[in-house]
Amino acid sequence: MPLFSNSFEKFMKKITVILLVFATLFSCRSVIIRNDIEDGTWMIGEMVFNAAYVKKADTTNALTAADFSSNGLNFYFGKYPTGNSNYKIVNNPGADDEVRIVAVMQDTTRAYVTTGSEEKNAKVTFNNGKITISVPKVEAKNIYAPEDVINIEALLTEK
Image 1 (cartoon, rainbow, N blue to C red):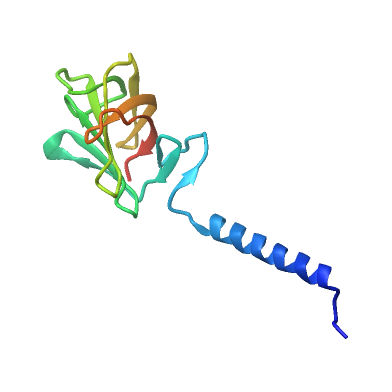
Image 2 (image 1 turned 45 degrees about the vertical axis):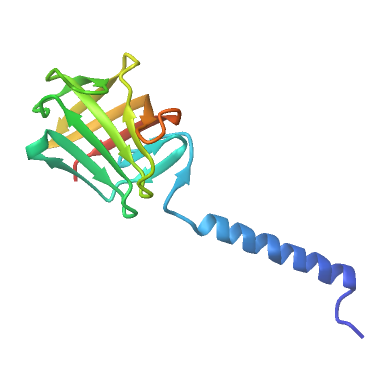
């Protein structure tokens, strides 16, 4: 005689499969989808990336952030910030107070560059000599497929 009825065993099998699916979905941590932004993160579209490092590149007037999966976000300033200020987000900085933002996905087929078509600013602040940059949602195009347009957003502090 069976320990449980057939309908109960079928129910338990379904529950087990559902739990395995949920466990698999929620065990992936490299990219989180949400609609807010925290310090140390940036968004490409709706995907959120966590910075493993954020550091200054002296020779290129740039600030670079990357996660552990080689996704990155680069800020190219007309002149590297030395104090609190706003920087106009553009496609190609020609003035000291302008910044170009480039987001690179690890698959190397997606590199998004700010278009400069919006009148938006990145806010730069300093605390204990470390730069923090806050970028509102801004439009960027994939340089390999210009019809692929997304939003980039970031809040990063130099580590």
